[in-house]
Length: 112
Length: 111
Image (tube, rainbow over all chains, first blue to last red; front, side, top):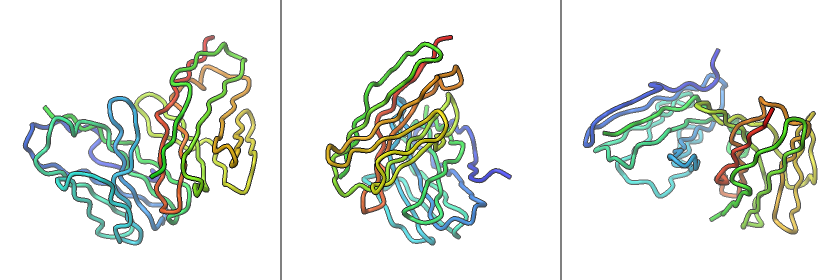
């Protein structure tokens, strides 16, 4: 009955690899987000999709590409991983753009 | 863009005492101010929020105040308990729907 879920929970990979993180919400929300939380715990928005349309696209390297196959899913694909990509990535969702955001459990990405 | 500053970065209180965390924001168009609590290794969870048409909101031991003129808002936790120990984040949302977070306050409640 988890509202916002992410897979995998942990991801350890080598520099230069390509990886994906998946997010699903069963709340019937229209809007989904990706956030990055760095080692100092700072939370920063990366992307937001509303009804499968990209709404927010912060200054993120184009190695990061979000994809929303439907309103309930928002995946994040990262190409050519770098050491600095190591962080916890949180997915979130809200009923609509101006509503309360609910976070997923996070994916801890470690790039070696 | 919006800039949210949060103070203090760490806060240690005796169990039963009150804790206050303050945030300031830069964009006068910001209209929604949530507070999230994040326990170690867990997701941020909303604990309380306030919209710009309200000056104060309370939920049991937690209260938030908003001063739009001064562009600052505060979280008040009364009768702190050990389970209140966590990192607390304030945030502000502007008209472009982006949620900008403060840097977080690590609260430790001493038994």
